[in-house]
Length: 209
Length: 122
View 1: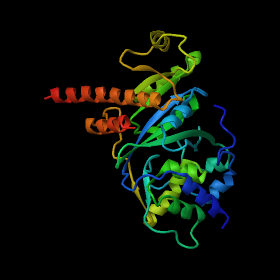
View 2: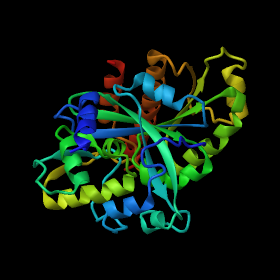
View 3: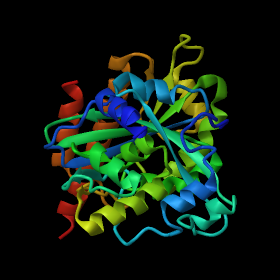
View 4: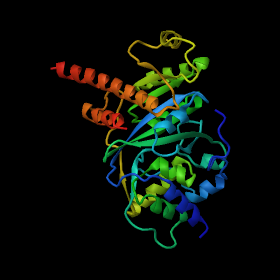
């Protein structure tokens, strides 16, 4: 069979998950075209970032309707992802998602249940992040903002915060998406933010008689 | 975004997608998340649809739905349908994400600590 050779290549190429992996988690990295999403995902991922796609129709909610694909009424959005094994049991998937409008049609379908999001921004094109930040707030998805600062800072983080109209409670950090340690710190920042939010929520629940 | 044109499946002949799913346009009730981990329980049988056989070979170790889609070069929605077939046939099992946060509920502190610890150990 012709397909055997490619199957073998794929299987040997891929770092398999441990057989004990039972629980996968999602974090989404949102950002405009060319801001460095794939670079960030790739710098911390244990696999070379992979690319896949989802089809959608704009007419109504019938995204599952594959007959639309046949009729070429559907459009396709592509996204990439990587993964990090956290423990014998837990594995974290990182998704790079373009922040533009049409992608949000698919947000619930693809990224419902995500732990949170990282909005990756490029200070030369901050306006590309406004829409993503707005939508994340509407969705109630916790997020942090990371400035991909590969050229050296032209603005202070305070200036970036003001330009993004970002509330004080949303963490804003600098990063170099090419650097594994720096990208890892961005994810840790998100997890610490989630931890603070969860602690605050727990406190509220305990105070309620 | 200017989507890359060399993606698997991007310029896929829509008829092929239709054929792979035998014209079914909606996935069965099983809700496969992007990161549901699929595990093969039975070897591919002779004469099986090639996509099914390929999934069974791929998922000998736990493999997320999204990785299956990337490997097969098919849209996630098509892969969900194929996985539904295999689940019904009992040839795979699915390890669904245990945690699904909602607007009202954040992940529990214990899990967040585990994730944080895992990241710090990288």
